[in-house]
Length: 283
Image (cartoon, rainbow, N blue to C red; front, side, top):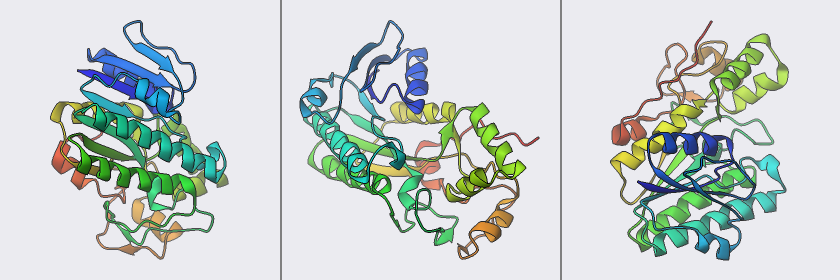
């Protein structure tokens, strides 16, 4: 398959680029900063905020994997993060539909639910929660993800292109995930609080890449978004103990055994079947 990849210089982008090439796909990659790529990859540098640049990309492809955005609210002002993430995505979606690309796979985020970057301490309304959990935004990064999901719905209605949004959690390498877990275990205050705000969710970069490959193989129709993360946590205590300590107001609809994640990924599993394989190993 021929794949257009945006955000190729990012953490997830690098892993997906490497994986696509290893699987024998033809890749056209872009980012707004310089990046290294295998010789077989056609690469370009430019800003998706420019509609001219977005439209100049090679949409004569089988799929677009869109990761090109500011990856957190810490990347700039509220206005800049929102404007960049929404308009860059809008330009890309519009061009993909105009060129009749079969499928666009794009990065949404578990931050869409509002707990990760909220000013006041916030907790999920209930657990385990699926994609229907009410969204409570406190900053423009989370808001931009919701706008992009609605934009995908609109473009799917207006054209033949299918859209799949993946609500990624904290994604990183095995070493980084282990390091984060160890800091929580040792009681590092900042890491403990961050872990609770991101709901102890994680996904190995290799599984993020395999999730994208699964969509490429199975295809898609219409527009859909999915929670996609590891089935367990990297928390230092069992899930029910962590909830009682940090999110006591959250309603527990179904008790969660052991270190089970509080996020329901059954919609993803029903459609695509792939379950993350690179899980946190407890020492």
